[in-house]
Length: 44
Image 1 (tube, rainbow, N blue to C red):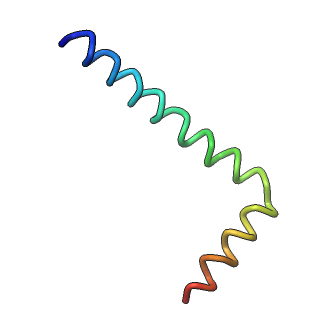
Image 2: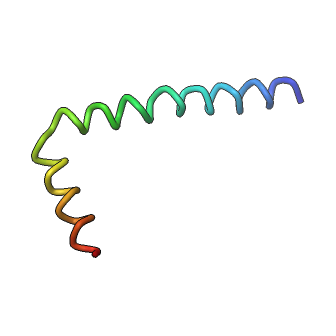
């Protein structure tokens, strides 16, 4: 049980670190952000 908890906690921590890094990486690509903004705006 302790080993399973450690593995789960490790995956959650990795996701918590990698997700913001991925978002920050996308912000460095202005063309992508413009496309996303246009697609979201098209929904309204």
